[in-house]
Image 1 (cartoon, rainbow, N blue to C red):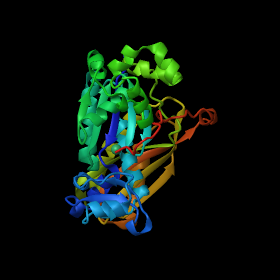
Image 2: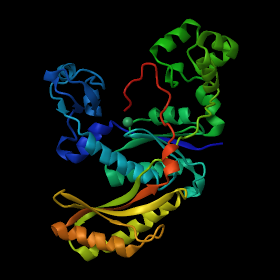
Image 3: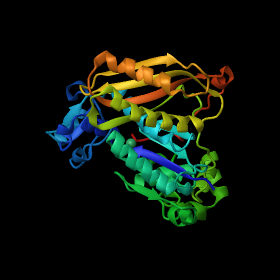
Image 4: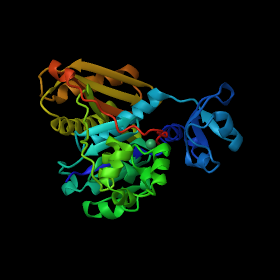
Length: 364
Ligand SMILES: [Mg+2]
Protein backbone atom coordinates (compact mmCIF):
# COMPACT_ATOMS: atom_id res chain seq x y z
CA UNK A 1 0.00 0.00 0.00
CA UNK A 2 1.42 3.37 -1.03
CA UNK A 3 1.29 6.71 0.74
CA UNK A 4 0.85 9.57 -1.69
CA UNK A 5 0.61 13.25 -0.84
CA UNK A 6 -0.68 15.77 -3.35
CA UNK A 7 0.28 19.36 -2.57
CA UNK A 8 -1.37 22.32 -4.23
CA UNK A 9 -0.77 25.97 -3.34
CA UNK A 10 -3.83 28.15 -2.80
CA UNK A 11 -4.33 30.81 -5.53
CA UNK A 12 -0.59 30.57 -6.08
CA UNK A 13 0.30 33.55 -8.28
CA UNK A 14 -1.97 35.88 -6.32
CA UNK A 15 -0.65 34.51 -3.02
CA UNK A 16 2.92 35.25 -4.08
CA UNK A 17 1.98 38.81 -5.04
CA UNK A 18 0.26 39.28 -1.67
CA UNK A 19 3.30 37.90 0.08
CA UNK A 20 5.60 40.26 -1.82
CA UNK A 21 3.38 43.25 -1.08
CA UNK A 22 1.49 42.86 2.21
CA UNK A 23 -0.32 46.16 1.56
CA UNK A 24 -2.54 44.46 -0.99
CA UNK A 25 -3.24 41.36 1.09
CA UNK A 26 -6.75 42.50 2.05
CA UNK A 27 -7.76 43.71 -1.39
CA UNK A 28 -9.31 41.71 -4.21
CA UNK A 29 -6.24 40.77 -6.25
CA UNK A 30 -5.82 38.98 -9.55
CA UNK A 31 -2.81 38.11 -11.65
CA UNK A 32 -3.57 38.45 -15.33
CA UNK A 33 -3.47 40.44 -18.51
CA UNK A 34 -4.47 44.03 -19.18
CA UNK A 35 -8.27 44.46 -19.37
CA UNK A 36 -7.77 46.95 -22.20
CA UNK A 37 -5.75 44.47 -24.23
CA UNK A 38 -8.06 41.46 -24.13
CA UNK A 39 -6.13 40.09 -21.16
CA UNK A 40 -7.28 37.05 -19.21
CA UNK A 41 -7.27 36.35 -15.46
CA UNK A 42 -4.76 33.69 -14.59
CA UNK A 43 -5.33 33.49 -10.83
CA UNK A 44 -7.22 35.54 -8.27
CA UNK A 45 -7.37 35.60 -4.50
CA UNK A 46 -10.36 34.63 -2.39
CA UNK A 47 -11.43 38.25 -1.82
CA UNK A 48 -11.84 38.54 -5.60
CA UNK A 49 -13.72 35.25 -5.82
CA UNK A 50 -16.44 36.67 -3.60
CA UNK A 51 -17.29 38.89 -6.57
CA UNK A 52 -17.41 35.94 -8.94
CA UNK A 53 -13.98 36.53 -10.46
CA UNK A 54 -12.45 33.30 -11.78
CA UNK A 55 -9.41 31.96 -13.61
CA UNK A 56 -9.59 32.07 -17.42
CA UNK A 57 -12.19 34.86 -17.33
CA UNK A 58 -11.45 37.95 -19.41
CA UNK A 59 -9.84 40.68 -17.33
CA UNK A 60 -12.33 43.20 -18.67
CA UNK A 61 -15.28 41.12 -17.43
CA UNK A 62 -13.55 40.50 -14.08
CA UNK A 63 -13.15 44.25 -13.66
CA UNK A 64 -16.86 44.66 -14.40
CA UNK A 65 -17.77 42.16 -11.68
CA UNK A 66 -15.32 43.70 -9.24
CA UNK A 67 -14.54 47.34 -10.09
CA UNK A 68 -11.83 47.58 -7.42
CA UNK A 69 -10.04 44.48 -8.62
CA UNK A 70 -6.29 44.97 -8.62
CA UNK A 71 -4.92 43.20 -11.71
CA UNK A 72 -1.19 42.53 -11.61
CA UNK A 73 0.80 41.36 -14.65
CA UNK A 74 2.28 37.95 -13.98
CA UNK A 75 5.90 37.56 -12.96
CA UNK A 76 6.70 33.97 -13.77
CA UNK A 77 10.36 34.09 -12.75
CA UNK A 78 9.28 35.22 -9.28
CA UNK A 79 6.71 32.42 -9.03
CA UNK A 80 9.42 30.02 -10.15
CA UNK A 81 11.53 31.07 -7.17
CA UNK A 82 8.66 30.32 -4.78
CA UNK A 83 8.08 27.03 -6.57
CA UNK A 84 11.74 26.06 -6.15
CA UNK A 85 11.56 26.91 -2.46
CA UNK A 86 8.49 24.65 -2.08
CA UNK A 87 10.27 21.83 -3.87
CA UNK A 88 13.29 22.27 -1.64
CA UNK A 89 11.03 21.52 1.33
CA UNK A 90 9.38 18.53 -0.40
CA UNK A 91 12.73 16.96 -1.09
CA UNK A 92 13.67 16.97 2.55
CA UNK A 93 10.99 14.32 3.02
CA UNK A 94 11.24 12.23 -0.13
CA UNK A 95 13.17 12.02 -3.39
CA UNK A 96 9.98 10.81 -5.14
CA UNK A 97 8.45 14.06 -6.31
CA UNK A 98 6.42 14.52 -9.47
CA UNK A 99 5.75 18.18 -10.22
CA UNK A 100 2.53 18.84 -12.13
CA UNK A 101 2.93 22.57 -12.37
CA UNK A 102 4.77 25.35 -10.54
CA UNK A 103 2.59 24.97 -7.46
CA UNK A 104 1.45 21.36 -7.57
CA UNK A 105 3.19 18.06 -7.01
CA UNK A 106 2.72 14.44 -6.04
CA UNK A 107 5.00 13.10 -3.33
CA UNK A 108 5.42 9.40 -2.67
CA UNK A 109 6.33 9.10 1.01
CA UNK A 110 5.82 5.33 1.29
CA UNK A 111 9.45 4.82 2.26
CA UNK A 112 9.82 7.93 4.35
CA UNK A 113 10.71 7.37 7.98
CA UNK A 114 9.89 10.88 9.16
CA UNK A 115 7.14 11.01 11.79
CA UNK A 116 7.23 7.20 12.04
CA UNK A 117 6.09 7.07 8.44
CA UNK A 118 2.85 8.96 9.02
CA UNK A 119 1.95 10.57 5.70
CA UNK A 120 -0.62 12.71 7.49
CA UNK A 121 1.99 14.19 9.83
CA UNK A 122 4.45 14.67 6.98
CA UNK A 123 1.78 16.54 5.02
CA UNK A 124 1.01 18.73 8.03
CA UNK A 125 4.69 19.47 8.52
CA UNK A 126 5.16 20.38 4.86
CA UNK A 127 2.12 22.68 4.99
CA UNK A 128 3.36 24.29 8.15
CA UNK A 129 6.89 24.83 6.86
CA UNK A 130 5.75 26.30 3.56
CA UNK A 131 3.57 28.70 5.49
CA UNK A 132 6.29 29.69 7.94
CA UNK A 133 9.27 29.78 5.58
CA UNK A 134 7.74 30.85 2.28
CA UNK A 135 4.71 32.75 3.49
CA UNK A 136 1.98 31.17 1.38
CA UNK A 137 -0.57 28.47 2.15
CA UNK A 138 -0.94 25.12 0.44
CA UNK A 139 -3.58 22.43 0.64
CA UNK A 140 -2.68 18.77 0.85
CA UNK A 141 -4.40 15.49 0.14
CA UNK A 142 -3.21 12.15 1.46
CA UNK A 143 -4.33 8.84 -0.04
CA UNK A 144 -3.04 5.43 -1.11
CA UNK A 145 -3.21 6.37 -4.82
CA UNK A 146 -2.48 9.41 -6.97
CA UNK A 147 -5.89 10.39 -8.24
CA UNK A 148 -7.47 10.24 -4.77
CA UNK A 149 -4.69 12.34 -3.25
CA UNK A 150 -5.36 15.00 -5.88
CA UNK A 151 -9.08 14.98 -5.22
CA UNK A 152 -8.35 15.11 -1.48
CA UNK A 153 -6.13 18.19 -1.73
CA UNK A 154 -9.05 20.03 -3.26
CA UNK A 155 -11.50 18.81 -0.60
CA UNK A 156 -10.67 21.29 2.16
CA UNK A 157 -9.23 24.12 0.09
CA UNK A 158 -7.90 26.68 0.94
CA UNK A 159 -5.25 25.91 3.55
CA UNK A 160 -6.66 22.47 4.22
CA UNK A 161 -5.64 18.89 4.71
CA UNK A 162 -7.80 15.93 3.83
CA UNK A 163 -6.80 12.33 4.38
CA UNK A 164 -8.32 9.25 2.78
CA UNK A 165 -6.89 6.29 4.70
CA UNK A 166 -6.85 2.90 2.93
CA UNK A 167 -9.83 1.57 4.89
CA UNK A 168 -11.92 4.62 3.95
CA UNK A 169 -11.31 4.47 0.20
CA UNK A 170 -14.51 2.66 -0.71
CA UNK A 171 -16.76 4.80 1.46
CA UNK A 172 -15.11 7.88 -0.07
CA UNK A 173 -15.45 6.85 -3.72
CA UNK A 174 -18.98 5.39 -3.55
CA UNK A 175 -20.77 8.78 -3.49
CA UNK A 176 -17.99 10.61 -5.35
CA UNK A 177 -19.37 12.42 -8.43
CA UNK A 178 -17.74 11.14 -11.64
CA UNK A 179 -17.03 14.75 -12.61
CA UNK A 180 -14.32 14.76 -9.93
CA UNK A 181 -12.38 11.96 -11.65
CA UNK A 182 -9.35 12.88 -13.75
CA UNK A 183 -10.18 12.63 -17.43
CA UNK A 184 -13.90 13.24 -16.90
CA UNK A 185 -14.72 16.64 -18.31
CA UNK A 186 -18.09 18.10 -19.08
CA UNK A 187 -18.61 16.09 -22.27
CA UNK A 188 -17.86 12.72 -20.66
CA UNK A 189 -19.89 13.64 -17.58
CA UNK A 190 -22.92 14.38 -19.78
CA UNK A 191 -22.51 11.12 -21.65
CA UNK A 192 -22.26 9.23 -18.36
CA UNK A 193 -25.36 11.00 -17.09
CA UNK A 194 -27.30 9.70 -20.10
CA UNK A 195 -26.61 6.19 -18.80
CA UNK A 196 -27.69 7.19 -15.31
CA UNK A 197 -24.10 7.29 -14.05
CA UNK A 198 -23.43 10.12 -11.63
CA UNK A 199 -21.26 8.59 -8.93
CA UNK A 200 -18.50 6.00 -8.68
CA UNK A 201 -21.02 3.57 -7.22
CA UNK A 202 -23.11 4.07 -10.38
CA UNK A 203 -19.98 3.33 -12.45
CA UNK A 204 -19.50 -0.01 -10.72
CA UNK A 205 -23.16 -0.90 -10.93
CA UNK A 206 -23.15 -0.20 -14.66
CA UNK A 207 -20.43 -2.80 -15.09
CA UNK A 208 -17.06 -3.14 -16.78
CA UNK A 209 -18.06 -4.68 -20.09
CA UNK A 210 -20.71 -2.06 -20.86
CA UNK A 211 -18.29 0.70 -19.85
CA UNK A 212 -15.66 -0.60 -22.25
CA UNK A 213 -18.27 -0.80 -25.00
CA UNK A 214 -19.31 2.82 -24.47
CA UNK A 215 -16.00 4.40 -23.53
CA UNK A 216 -13.24 2.13 -24.85
CA UNK A 217 -10.01 2.02 -22.90
CA UNK A 218 -11.18 4.87 -20.71
CA UNK A 219 -14.11 2.71 -19.60
CA UNK A 220 -11.69 0.36 -17.91
CA UNK A 221 -9.90 3.24 -16.30
CA UNK A 222 -13.23 4.58 -15.03
CA UNK A 223 -14.09 1.20 -13.59
CA UNK A 224 -10.74 1.04 -11.78
CA UNK A 225 -11.06 4.54 -10.38
CA UNK A 226 -14.58 3.78 -9.18
CA UNK A 227 -12.93 1.22 -6.89
CA UNK A 228 -10.16 3.56 -5.84
CA UNK A 229 -7.60 1.80 -8.04
CA UNK A 230 -4.86 3.80 -9.75
CA UNK A 231 -1.67 1.96 -10.60
CA UNK A 232 0.30 4.96 -11.76
CA UNK A 233 3.54 5.56 -9.87
CA UNK A 234 4.78 8.93 -8.83
CA UNK A 235 7.22 9.76 -11.64
CA UNK A 236 10.15 11.35 -9.92
CA UNK A 237 12.09 13.54 -12.28
CA UNK A 238 15.63 12.30 -12.34
CA UNK A 239 16.82 15.24 -14.39
CA UNK A 240 17.33 17.48 -11.42
CA UNK A 241 20.40 19.55 -12.06
CA UNK A 242 20.72 21.19 -8.70
CA UNK A 243 19.55 21.06 -5.13
CA UNK A 244 19.42 23.81 -2.56
CA UNK A 245 18.08 24.78 0.83
CA UNK A 246 17.67 28.24 2.22
CA UNK A 247 16.66 30.10 5.32
CA UNK A 248 14.98 33.48 5.76
CA UNK A 249 16.02 35.08 9.02
CA UNK A 250 13.37 36.35 11.36
CA UNK A 251 15.53 39.44 11.89
CA UNK A 252 18.09 40.51 9.31
CA UNK A 253 21.58 39.41 10.30
CA UNK A 254 24.10 42.23 10.41
CA UNK A 255 27.43 40.56 11.00
CA UNK A 256 29.15 38.04 8.79
CA UNK A 257 30.17 35.80 11.69
CA UNK A 258 26.54 35.51 12.77
CA UNK A 259 25.73 33.82 9.46
CA UNK A 260 28.03 30.92 10.20
CA UNK A 261 25.87 28.96 12.68
CA UNK A 262 23.03 29.08 10.16
CA UNK A 263 25.42 28.00 7.41
CA UNK A 264 26.28 24.92 9.45
CA UNK A 265 22.60 24.08 9.81
CA UNK A 266 21.87 24.63 6.14
CA UNK A 267 24.74 22.37 5.12
CA UNK A 268 23.35 19.68 7.39
CA UNK A 269 19.92 19.98 5.80
CA UNK A 270 21.49 19.91 2.34
CA UNK A 271 23.54 16.85 3.23
CA UNK A 272 20.46 15.05 4.49
CA UNK A 273 18.60 15.80 1.28
CA UNK A 274 21.53 14.79 -0.85
CA UNK A 275 21.74 11.49 1.00
CA UNK A 276 18.25 10.61 -0.23
CA UNK A 277 19.29 10.79 -3.89
CA UNK A 278 20.63 7.80 -5.74
CA UNK A 279 24.32 7.51 -6.46
CA UNK A 280 24.14 8.82 -10.03
CA UNK A 281 24.23 12.37 -8.70
CA UNK A 282 27.75 13.61 -8.21
CA UNK A 283 28.34 17.06 -6.84
CA UNK A 284 29.93 19.32 -9.38
CA UNK A 285 29.56 22.80 -7.92
CA UNK A 286 28.84 24.44 -4.58
CA UNK A 287 26.52 27.44 -4.60
CA UNK A 288 25.69 30.08 -2.03
CA UNK A 289 22.87 32.58 -2.35
CA UNK A 290 22.62 35.68 -0.19
CA UNK A 291 19.66 38.02 -0.19
CA UNK A 292 20.32 41.32 1.54
CA UNK A 293 17.94 43.47 3.56
CA UNK A 294 17.27 45.69 0.53
CA UNK A 295 16.24 42.54 -1.42
CA UNK A 296 19.29 42.69 -3.66
CA UNK A 297 20.65 39.22 -4.19
CA UNK A 298 23.94 37.62 -5.05
CA UNK A 299 24.93 34.06 -5.88
CA UNK A 300 28.42 32.69 -5.93
CA UNK A 301 29.76 29.28 -6.91
CA UNK A 302 32.87 27.21 -6.83
CA UNK A 303 33.82 23.75 -8.11
CA UNK A 304 33.51 21.01 -5.55
CA UNK A 305 36.96 19.88 -4.57
CA UNK A 306 36.26 16.34 -3.60
CA UNK A 307 33.46 14.40 -5.18
CA UNK A 308 30.77 13.39 -2.76
CA UNK A 309 32.41 14.95 0.29
CA UNK A 310 30.67 18.05 1.53
CA UNK A 311 33.19 20.44 2.90
CA UNK A 312 32.18 23.25 5.20
CA UNK A 313 35.26 25.36 4.44
CA UNK A 314 34.40 25.84 0.78
CA UNK A 315 30.89 26.98 1.64
CA UNK A 316 32.20 29.32 4.34
CA UNK A 317 34.55 30.92 1.82
CA UNK A 318 31.67 31.45 -0.58
CA UNK A 319 29.55 33.08 2.13
CA UNK A 320 32.46 35.29 3.02
CA UNK A 321 33.05 36.36 -0.60
CA UNK A 322 29.34 36.86 -1.28
CA UNK A 323 28.79 38.93 1.84
CA UNK A 324 31.70 41.23 0.99
CA UNK A 325 30.10 42.13 -2.31
CA UNK A 326 27.49 44.25 -0.50
CA UNK A 327 28.40 44.29 3.20
CA UNK A 328 24.79 44.76 4.21
CA UNK A 329 22.60 42.92 6.67
CA UNK A 330 21.33 39.63 5.34
CA UNK A 331 17.74 38.56 4.96
CA UNK A 332 18.20 35.11 3.47
CA UNK A 333 20.99 32.61 3.17
CA UNK A 334 20.90 29.61 0.85
CA UNK A 335 23.32 26.84 -0.04
CA UNK A 336 23.21 24.29 -2.81
CA UNK A 337 24.88 21.97 -5.27
CA UNK A 338 24.89 21.62 -8.99
CA UNK A 339 25.16 18.06 -10.20
CA UNK A 340 27.05 16.40 -12.93
CA UNK A 341 24.69 13.76 -14.23
CA UNK A 342 25.91 10.62 -15.92
CA UNK A 343 25.33 10.85 -19.66
CA UNK A 344 23.23 7.71 -19.64
CA UNK A 345 21.02 9.23 -17.00
CA UNK A 346 20.37 12.21 -19.25
CA UNK A 347 18.96 9.93 -21.93
CA UNK A 348 16.54 8.21 -19.59
CA UNK A 349 14.55 11.20 -18.48
CA UNK A 350 11.06 10.00 -17.67
CA UNK A 351 7.97 11.71 -18.92
CA UNK A 352 5.96 13.28 -16.15
CA UNK A 353 2.51 14.74 -16.19
CA UNK A 354 -0.92 13.76 -15.14
CA UNK A 355 -3.96 12.57 -17.03
CA UNK A 356 -5.08 15.49 -19.12
CA UNK A 357 -8.69 16.42 -18.56
CA UNK A 358 -10.64 16.70 -21.77
CA UNK A 359 -11.62 20.23 -20.80
CA UNK A 360 -9.17 20.90 -18.07
CA UNK A 361 -9.81 23.91 -15.94
CA UNK A 362 -7.00 25.95 -14.55
CA UNK A 363 -5.86 24.47 -11.30
CA UNK A 364 -5.71 26.68 -8.28
MG1 LIG B 1 -2.81 25.72 -6.87
